[in-house]
Image (cartoon, rainbow, N blue to C red; front, side, top):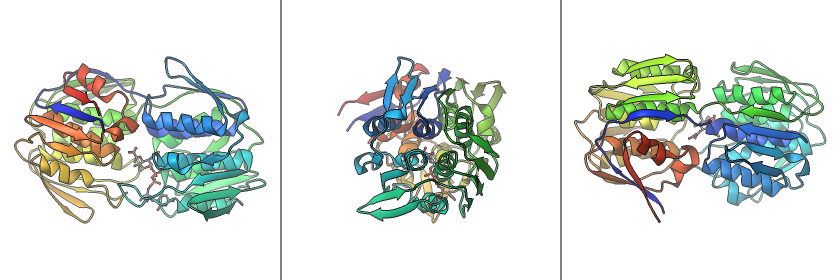
Length: 418
Ligand code: EPU
């Protein structure tokens, strides 16, 4: 397995171009299944999860091409297999996003039920209940969700918990259903708005995205479109933490500062100097930051996808801090690895208590999921000596060209071959 070797201690300086958002491009790629016309998607990040989704669509029979700028052109009119196999779903849970579009457009789908995950049990019961309320016939057999419908119909769906991909699946199912669908307690993440913007361009009638009440009026069919994916707010925030943790100075371009207001607030509170202009964020940190308390919650609160990176930052900041993970039940796997690097962290249920230490020291560590990998890389960038991060296939799922981007701003980071 490939590893990353990081020699820590250098402040990062320079400019980073932020890539398109992983969690936008995945549902938008799935949305191409809703039309018989060509859907062209731009600002697509070169990520393992994108490659997996593209393989999935191709396996289903979609015609697909990618140009040198990663513009992806998909025509789903040739789709003739409505099937997402276990081999793909087990490497990427977001494969579940094909369920809603397949049912809505083709009336059938067979999608492997995603299993457990390193960050929590992550059931998809709310996706299935929503689709059932819209008239789909759904059973689970031999580990697969088998769904059929003559025609989906609009329904009133009230999620007990706001779910991001659940909201996306129901939205994509509802755009071709007969009548109106009302989603209550919908997720409000910027990626939901991005998907809705793309679907509207395809002719869908959607209102209220970005709020907790979304109303979708089904239309007969959707046309093709040409759409650029939103910049990645979690990549943006991770680079902000990279500047903060190494006491560096970075300019992030092609981003959307309005999607990470809470991160900017927290970093400013910790003592970082941040300025924002249009799609650019400048950050400068000269001295050690103050530790900040965090509670993760759905957007617009603090994102669970930045919890691990902030624990790394807090572990070498001044003072004691408390980080509460409220979204997933098991998202502290990075903590024991950070402790191996000298961090002082205690876990009690869903709360981590972090006492800032003077220095972290390099160590061999193991990545357990995408954001955990990011936190270990951040720790490695500031640690004394060498850190080897193992199982970095996780990082390639969600951060485009991570070591190239970090090298360009002065990090000493190298990929070790298998
Ligand atoms: N939940 C249920 N039942 C369901 C669906 C969700 O109980 O049917 C629970 C989950 O177990 C969790 C909570 O609801 O406790 C919220 O989960 P959600 O469904 O919102 O998560 P998701 O849609 O599976 C997306 C992102 C994750 C991100 C979460 C939370 C994508 C492809 N994935 O997952 O991204 O952490 O929302 O913001 O959009 C990542 O990028 O590293 C990542 C894990």
